[in-house]
Image (cartoon, rainbow, N blue to C red; front, side):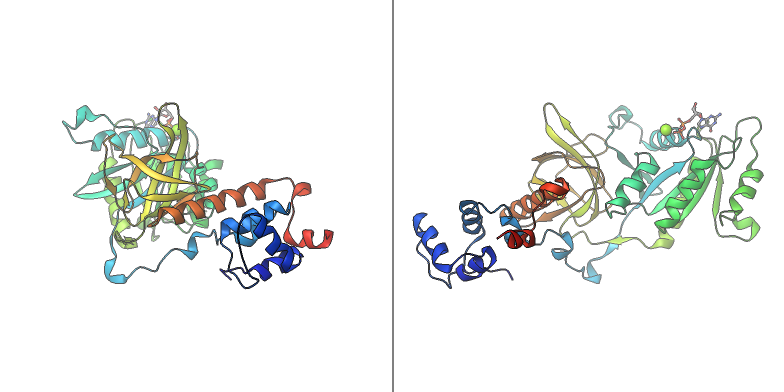
Length: 370
Ligand code: GDP
Ligand code: MG
């Protein structure tokens, strides 16, 4: 339950009620046995009795699920797809990400200067797409191990002169495990020895069968190096994105995932967040992974300061108390005090979970010792 009386606590600590009341008196608090104790007092009492497990008793539920509200269907609007580029090393992932970014930066826009914040958005035919700039495998493994799923569509890059390689297969497995649609980008078509038919043939073994062959997988032949096929790829991404009917609620409490984070000498902890639902505002109180804070400043992928960011938008924020990890989830709380409480509880839980097994104490252990 959410409340704890003096006699409840006495029971939990295996002390007499009068012992608790006496201790409270020594702390200047007059109480009877039915008195509700607030978290701070419980913590103080546990401290006084040398009980190390105090937080177990008062820990608020630290799970974000508890605070997430269901969206009203009427509030749902279309949102951009979040795309991850995957594939074998040297098949052209980085070249493709750069090519998309550079061909789509509108002319005259700050001289085409883009900031590296771990993700970026491009506009194609008036519609946006969000690209994760992090290596696809890392994005999938580290994020999924934390229960985060940020990718809507995977682009599988396969070099036409090299074909399916071990990390190609790994990438397919990740995308399949995440139940994410795959578009195949057959890259390096400009190279001598490029053999797109062989790539298609090899991929049929992994149930990626091109539409021309009666399958459902979209293949795009391209050269990231020569900037050929980029528009077709973006068109196909848009198409798949429409089929997926991706929606979010801009009115919801902002929720999403950390794409990357680091400590900046001047700015302190800096984190790139990908909004998955809701709208994040400057000065929002936010719990991020096992830390929390207030959004001091927000910068978008063009390096511009913004006041708000909606679903599928990546933003870099400052104002956190410490550096979260990629894959951590975040949630905004309307109440700063609540954010602090949940943030501190999550931090405490994290510290406890990382303690070595031998030094771990549970409330049960404690009872046995007494
Ligand atoms: P990644 O490891 O998948 O990120 O691969 P990179 O983007 O770093 O590309 C590996 C190498 O392939 C680099 O030398 C690129 O210049 C080259 N490369 C990438 N795309 C193409 C392409 O379409 N054509 C040719 N000829 N070379 C490419
Ligand atoms: Mg690379």
